Length: 372
Image (cartoon, rainbow, N blue to C red):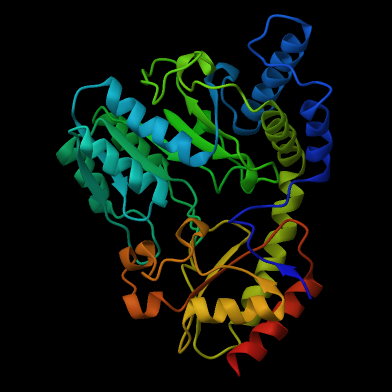
């Protein structure tokens, strides 16, 4: 049996995406910075991808900047802004991705101070978070749109309105959200946004940072001035083309994918509730349609994960970026879950081709492992 239930860690690259990328490995191998026809063809392909991605998230084409991945995009947003401006305050939520936490630490090394905004038992920012914004008046606020572990979708309207009211810019990490739910950059009124190709059936090794035109960002490294000076280095044309194709595919099938995956998730949750000692985290708030995090009383999450892997089901105990670490999830701790209980967590993240038969197969495996 081979059940892949870890699509928040990464998704398989769609067949259509692989097909779109294939010519750019060899026959269309031009460097986009070259002025001859091969370079012009590559440049055109990059710009087509920029248009496809901007259409998915509803931003201007000129706001799209390609990076190597979502982590780099997050660091460019936070460090790049901090380097370009005087020392001020950055605010972040207590449940951010490790790449954001690392970037905040580096911003602090530049002389900035930081404010951590608390969340409630569901991982939603508390009213006191807005009070902190009004008290500290940060220059930059960074918040994840959809949590990579719990799938919780953060309400953004009031947060962004409050941030703008106190003069802050807002960066949103939408890496887990884009392609899974509707993400509208204009409607959100964000100032910067991160998305990543391999979370929406595109290739690994390419991300995007969306930057509003008036924002000054200092590059993190020097070079040839690619991406309008924000991110130097020869563009990964095959991956960028793949990102564009994946974005177009996600946009065309988003509604049907959400309906199908949400139906499968509901069935999965119904079956999980039949087990004593299994709790679904944040089950009463809006979450990504594909994501279920559970706590399993009496079991170490990593141990249960290994058992399920050996039995043929691939899932995770939290963020893939934290794999191999023995500490409990920082976000579960921030949600008020004890360290001991946080270590019992498992994350199930469904892919868009999941079937109800596969849900049944997983439940059979799960039942067998927790009764060993």
